[in-house]
Each structure stands twice: as structure tokens, then as C-alpha cells.
Image (cartoon, rainbow, N blue to C red; front, side):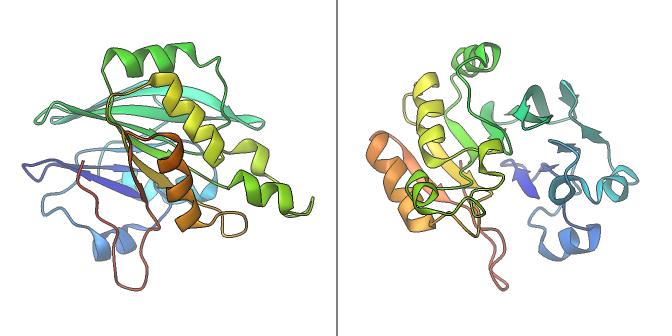
Length: 214
């Protein structure tokens, strides 16, 4: 789960893979979230969908998602046999945009998405790096299972270069515990996109949250 908070403490949630109890324990915003948007039905993203739907507007793979202070436009992308919805999210208060995308395969055919990212001059990217290509090539067939449905570090480099933002801020998410090395991920992307600021989100580690300012 990801919590987006603007400068006025308005907030929204992305994904419903943790319980409301866990969210309440680690939440950062003081005010209740306005909306929750979910990318697809796989359990680690969707499991507690109905819990959140009971208390706030919660939407699964919806094209247009609007609350008082946020807008999110969805794009259905390929994820194996299903689709996963990526979102371009706007903070109305700050007039800032962030791209959120996880659990999808890279393709240069996502023309509408790339054109929209360029149109809004999106600089902030909360994007999956599920595995490192160099570890993939060293791995066994068993270790590689499922990787083709996700983004690698090279895929993310190609994705960002396709949009060509001026000074992108890239936060990588959803790394594999098998074929992903966080330090390498950051160094690799930084070396390929020299104008980028790169960080790796690893979720809750012990009692420490990962917080990022966009």
C-alpha cells in the first residue's frame, strides 16, 4: 500500500494489499484518506479491497478516479494473462503529477500512456523494478518464473527514456526478494539516466517507514 499526502495533509491510498488495522498503525496523514485506487486483483494488491471500500471510495482498475483534492487517470497495461492499471495522479492543491505503475510488462506500444505523460510533463515516477536483468541472466529457470510479467531495471530505463522528462524523480517499488538488489538498482538506473534522482522503496522495515518528498 502507498499513501500519497499533499502539503495540506489531504491523502489518498494506492492498493489494498494490507489490512485497515495495519494501515492505521503505520499511516502518516492525520486526516482520513479521500480515496483508494487499486491496480489489479492479485492478492498482494487487492486482498483487503472490501475492507477499504466499506469506509472510503475504493476503485478497482477504473479509468477516471476523482476526489476532492486528487485525480487519477488509469491505463490498462499487460500483466501476463490479465491487465494491471497504472495511474497518472494529480494533486489538485499542488498541481503536481506522479505516475504509479506496478505489475506490468514493458512495451513501446503504450502510446496513449506515453503521450499523456509527456502532455502533463510528469516528473515523478513511483514505478516497479521487480528484478535486475544481470541477476535474471545468472538465475535458474525456476528462479525466473513470473519475471516476464514484470518490469526489470532495464525496462524502467527504457520507459523513462520514452517519456524523456526533464528532471525525473524515480522511486522504485515492488522489488523481488529473489532477483533484485536494491543498491544495484539505484546505481544502475542513476548511471543510465543521468538527470534522474533515484530512490528505492522497501516498505516497512521493522518500525521504520520509507517516506519520500516529491
